[in-house]
Length: 328
Image 1 (cartoon, one colour):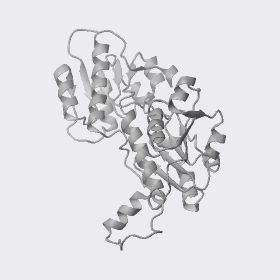
Image 2 (spheres, rainbow, N blue to C red; image 1 turned 120 degrees about the horizontal axis):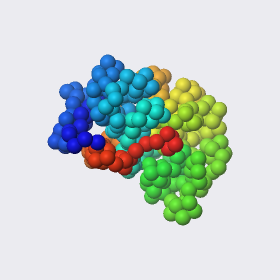
Image 3 (tube, rainbow, N blue to C red; image 1 turned 180 degrees about the vertical axis):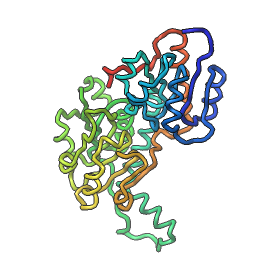
Image 4 (cartoon, one colour; image 1 turned 90 degrees about the horizontal axis):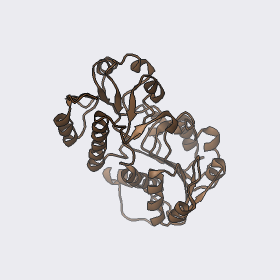
């Protein structure tokens, strides 16, 4: 790489300390408002920049990459998930892709536990009663929820976030179970007190709470499809802080409405902000606007990782968080 300042285009507003540091180090183009770039703006960015810093709201597909200029050599994603980036096509064009893994594990795990508590203890329903001024006083049978201690928690994807969820859930007295593509080492299982299930179907059928913590890939799209959702116990709860595409949202909505699943806590959705209106109307569902990683500390750390990836690349070395197709 040359010693000159890199041309870097950032597609969304980032926390002020991150934008300030980017401006100090690079010839950076920042957004003036916190809205996604238009397709035309993205095309202009890939045609002119040395590096682009997209987020999950930007679709960096094969058609866009085909319009990239020869100078574009790094897509430094602000976020861990890269399902919105065609990593294979980027690689074919000699463009590296990096991400920001591990930063938001604790923050997202906190939110997963918040959703588990919110659904099982009916917290939003209690809030609604109070906000409407409808509370008449304590009652022995009002808003009865369920105790977490002793319940079986099935974690689909026991990576960084899944393990953070496991540690939190264990502190609440929950029994930890998991399904992965690959079984973890025995010492890790013992440390977490986690039981491995080779069969996802068998695990799903026996859990009281199911937490989705796997990434969205072609192999995990609708992994929780209608058939598998029907395996869940009628009094079970499902929580998703990963990617909405992992669950068949329409099938989940039908089953929640029919009482075939007791409740759901969702921070992500299959079609982004276009949430099924029937899902919104259900009292046994807690819906959040994709805020699992939304802490100031986490978002600044994500920016620091982006900057380190760009600086390392500019110095002629492999970015520490480079993503390659074999990882997907």
